Length: 471
Image: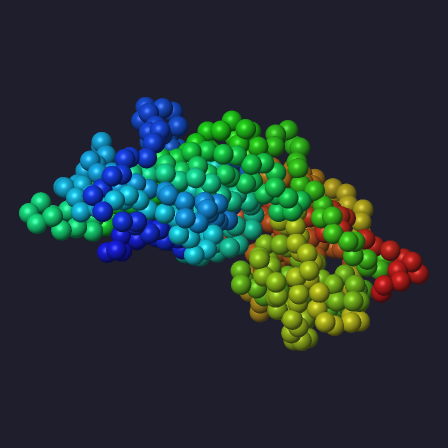
């Protein structure tokens, strides 16, 4: 937002026109907040503690990502007055001295977008909520892997500006009365906040809050500073709304709200389970395990049908619509990401290849102490087709989502993500997803997504070939 010599107001894509003979303008009515209210004051020590908790994964709230702010203010609405006698509390020599007639600004928007998640409004929202301890995915000031971080958000937050009023003071030179192009200002806004569930693809709740911002000393960016400061105030009010806090609190007691996708089911052939020792099938398993390249790095995946369907982790594909899929023999194919589920951390890719030898899926979970084998490319692509062995150590639930995980001591590294965990007969029992490390290496505390759960959350169904007319 900037102020032009002709006194035009431009909050990002919006512009407002100064209407002009003697200044007859009275101040707009604004409810200035009490600076001692809880909403207006955040104890700095407490804020620092909450911010640290949020930044280091110790927030008590569900992950939230701010998307964008748009305007719902009608084109031509008066949003700011420049009163003849100035405004109490706003500084500036010869305030509005040369203004004549009805000195106001109108909202002249060239588009509805006020700002994206990484613009000035997004930064104000991110900062205000983080200081209240909210787990904000996607830091607008981060340099790397921002989009990947945003993908973990359980809810999305959008904002709609529904009202704006303000008073301004343009400073004039004390000697000759010429305008100085500097402004002090106060702005009050009303914001409608929409919390959206990306899994159910529908709004969950709508909240409303007001925000007040003030720039007391004249500056070239005085109106813009007050405008963005008002967004910070509106976000503070949202952050202390008890209904918003209740909605965002992480589920307790092992319960979870994650639901499978409700898209049309995808059918894959139910392959006969292998019953010989895994070494008898190892070459076929290696041929069916792939490397996946995306903007977030590399990972692994595996073929589950002769129609080119491949399973991997959502954090491997990130937000990409297309990824590169590399087979053991060096063939590289373009893979389309058909489905993804953030909380379950699974994704379905399809490559334009048919045939192959997909790995059978063992929908029953392996028992504790059973031998299991992980296949993938740990750390680098050059180490593709690496096989490691271990045993199932425990059955867990994720502290963040409440979803089931298989714990095993089989060694995996970062590039193994999305690769298969196989039982002793070479059937896929789970998908590699994460691990606990000390320094750069695994310490045998690694976690895997049960294959039945992965299929369920992507709404993939296995059927006998004679019942599947669409193969």
